[in-house]
Length: 152
Image 1 (tube, rainbow, N blue to C red):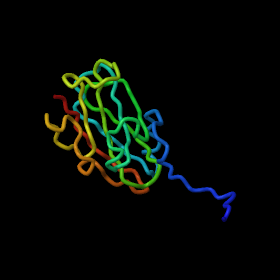
Image 2: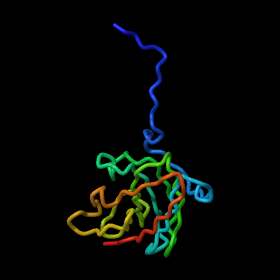
Image 3: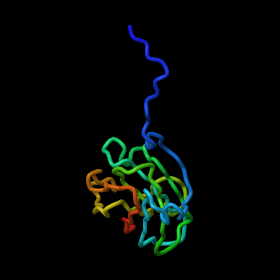
Image 4: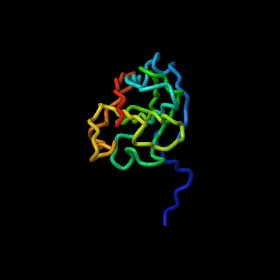
């Protein structure tokens, strides 16, 4: 029997889930890695807009509690911008939700949503497109995503 003592296994930085952060533009002014997210078409200034960062893998995409970072801001009609730092270079997905009444629940008839790569949403996928359609790569720099908010 071999005893292994004092061995530490490296855990990737993104292994920590559910970290709430604030929308701070500083990481997008630096060298990264970070994502500048421009959201167009916010329907009104009611409620909050929530942006969540997921690993770009099937087991995490839009799964409850599997987001890495989340930030919220009061909704502002028209366009909004966010700066999402990422823990390390890799493959990610972004989900945005406009919670119009601020109740924390998804109200299909009033709330809006946007996702990385602007996939088509329809009644059959109810806002959950395949992770392959929403994932994108982030290197060690700042990238920009232009997302279009959609309402049913």
